[in-house]
Length: 58
Image (tube, rainbow, N blue to C red):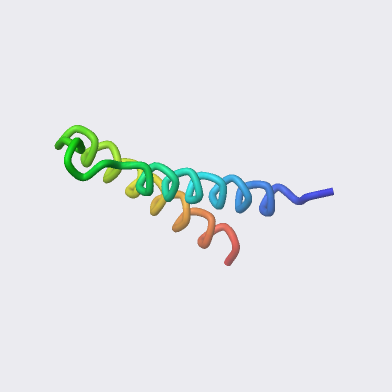
């Protein structure tokens, strides 16, 4: 059985993989400012969650 910590880590990993898939699927010719802003928001959220996860592990 997975621990709560491992479950959170797995969720972060899944979200990172999802972001990579989104980035891979973007067409540079059709990507607008709104799309870039959403990606930046996703990265910021992932960063916050990674920091939180790291602090919980200390």
